[in-house]
Length: 385
Image (tube, rainbow, N blue to C red; front, side, top):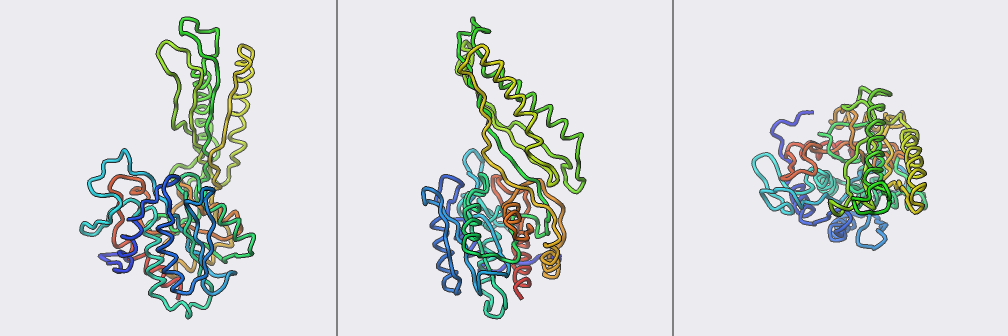
């Protein structure tokens, strides 16, 4: 992949500036302004468009096809970005800025850079000469559990729309990624009974019970590190970690409630339910003990996110070869999750390949190298030839 001192097109930078100016923060902000820009451009190119909406209709997926609804390639990316609050930015996060060989702004890397390249290339391509269908997808709320793409896939299935293959343009340095871990995010809520701290032992201390469950998660995580491994991953085993804990209101009150979130990242070969079963059993054991003292006590384990892993399959070999011929290279497996696992589960052969470095995603002063945008443009152009 020759990327030395390459400059991307002005069209890509123009699109990226417009996309970055839309503050599409996951779950809270609308992406409809951004989609209106995309809608106008794609309609002018002759694409047929369809929408699926969030429950409050403030966010939407846009799916567009040129040349038919069955077959062809799908280029997919999410429109939402993570918040900038609490980060120390040295420049306006929702205004594209350039410094030497990099451009900065929230989402330039994850993943509006890819979307800008797709739009710029489509506008500069004789689409009639491609000879097969082209599909593009702009999804919402990927960052908080790949929410939007699920309704998009239901819509495609209902109406018999099925691309031959999909490229999800998450940042991989324009290397082809064929596998990533799956993710389940869960929240545990422990309900006990508050008491004055001088009466400790008479009620149910929700914080102490939660700590026992946290210890069980830690023990299970250690067991995972010693069990099945896949050396193609940087972290070669499934992982489980507690990420947020909250309990208590005062130093002299036994906590009535405790809550913590934990995260399971599992290998494609692993079965997440098998990993979680010991934790469910431990929670049931602790709940029975709690209720023997206070009958209203309870433990709730709620799954907040479930994203399947992506794994290499033979039906993706042809897509991978096409990407190689277009100038992409083979990349390693990755630990982060994407919408790719959901596309693959829906029967669409899928790989991950997009510009930028995942290390820059979600950071203050997020940036992407200009040469990465140039390589992305080149690969898409050659892919469509």
